[in-house]
Image: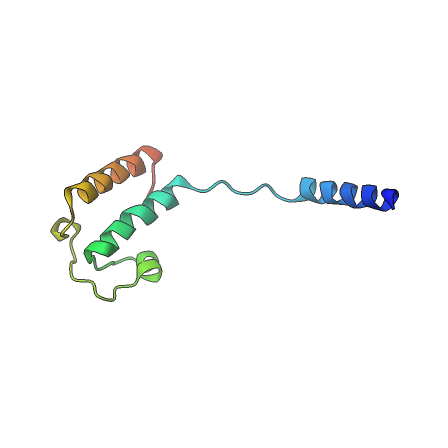
Length: 91
């Protein structure tokens, strides 16, 4: 019984060593998602295929981010996110 358990542990360890390392989450993806979530709540009509797939355009009312009715807190958060996206070199 003990030998079987040791073999199972060894096999498990070997498999974990051979598995590719988990990819770290891209900060650009997180920033993009947060910024566009704020835009979606404010009624933005997305133009890119990626954003439309993620958020859709149902109920959208505004084609320009500058026209979005957002609180000052949301505007400040978006400005900070855009600053971070530039710092990371996000596209």
